[in-house]
Length: 408
Image (cartoon, rainbow, N blue to C red; front, side, top):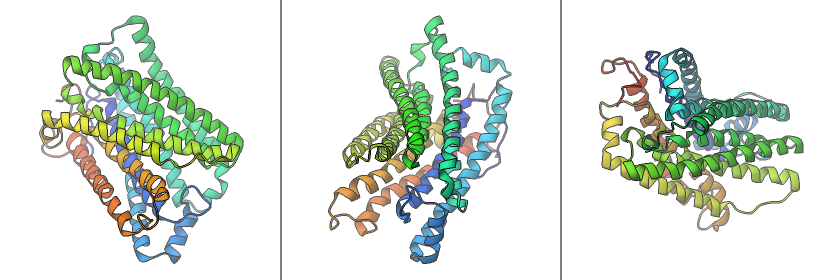
């Protein structure tokens, strides 16, 4: 996880390196899922410091060991997230002064800048989890914290729109968008960013008991999520059209899986909005089993399609295990994290409540059997994350000076 970073030349930097920080933040949250669904936290939508203290005072040994592993994972990947974020912010400031930045601003690749608000949004989520789990008594003043969270996501949302509207207005008024080079799904990155901002707003809507906070969170969540879905639909059509016409760009193949994290984020947003509705109108919206299953099915479809193309082009042999290096390969981390997170919700909020206890109940043998592929997916994602970081950004004898412009 931790490795010695090398500094790319200012000209050779890519905003897609922010995805390394994003991946670490996502892995931190993936360990939080064990606390969320395995640790008792009655009376609270998420486990807080007091609940973790109760676990270590009166729970079974296996649950305590799980809690320790999860907490170490949360802290470790959170530290690495902030380390990678600071490295990227420093590198990006130098990159802004180069001709390469101006070239990027006048090309299809300008949307890569949306990786910045996407990663910053993840940081707010990571900070929220760290505060809730590790700061004593903080959850007791949660209603004072939510306005700051809403302001943070609002500021990031403004930044995201400013970045995207620069690209959108240029393309609409001047043209120049090269459809022949749109033969991947990288243009869905803005939708990914807006969806992440939306799910952040939804967190306050789900966890606050104040109607004003809930309604502001819901409005923000709905606005950014609808924006994300509209953009994703448009960019899916354009991207697949270009791929069918010109063939998929090999270096951009990781983007074929980008809809997996988008679907996870939209799914969690819907869950949170449902919780928020309980505060406003005291109406329960029923089991999420059907639409969670539909989202899992759509993720499976994108995974099958994307992985089949990668296999045919030997992407993993070339860009993961081979000598080729590309900043876009960091997009492979998000689908693994997203799949793990949404499957946690599917099992615990979808399957367990609707199946009879004699078929499936929490912590029985069938429950843990269902978790085996999830744990394996998380393990493989962590290994992939470590491999890519050391290969693309780490300092070791096989790595020369990395230039994102010439990487292949």
